[in-house]
Image (tube, rainbow, N blue to C red; front, side):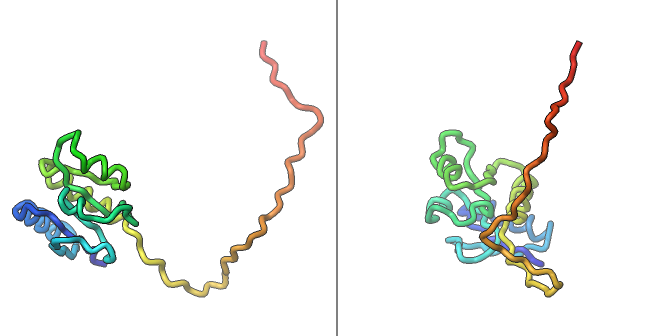
Length: 147
């Protein structure tokens, strides 16, 4: 199955490098988009400008890879943390690191539930809990002697 990646990066040279690396490394369908579409499934690789345009809270922040500047006081980093984004990399990071972050996000993408097969076993969710009998302890408790 081919994974879809929405690539929303303003730096065209960097976006081209990421797109080419993705298409050469795995079976990825890469869409360069100006504004990411949250209704589409797949990974979203965003720069800080694209991230700033997203409505928060995100329904699935684990699928976002943020390309951020290496400034510890950057306001986007705090917003990314609050939004629950797990993958933040820098444009100065090696391209292999960026690809690993994208692959990790792809593993976190919600997959559609597999169609159920009739196997004879039925899941039943009830409101009653099963009673578990209490553990019976002997009246004599064994104690450990330390000398």
